[in-house]
Image (cartoon, rainbow, N blue to C red; front, side, top):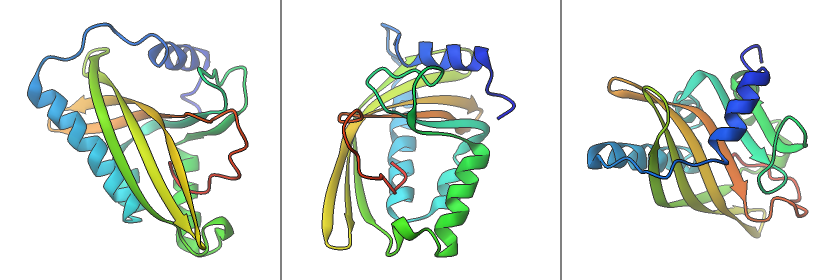
Length: 181
């Protein structure tokens, strides 16, 4: 993770704990962000992991804190994956040797309460609530919380630079969350 350094961590923690007061007023921008989050959820539900990964920038982070308001510099995380680790996850899911996903989960994700905030030039912060239903081997599990995304706008293309998944029960026994949340 050559791009993950002290400055990266500091900006990451600041971005997802100090949300701006003003939201983006432009309806088209808000709609574009909402559609992107809904597409991300659909791709994960359909098991289209390569297409999902293509939504992410080359220098990205997928972070699930293990405590409310977690800080990856000081605390263990449920997940803290860079692009390389995400590629490995997707590869393992395709090999048939990811035993925690044999058979694969069937999921459905709901994304709601999408708010879009200005961040830096050509970047936005997006906050949304989610509920994921995960059915596997006769058991149904529910995952809920809120997500923070940092998006980078490249003309018509929008890339995910950071996805922080904040589980409501992150500090409880999660029993091996084996799906991409």
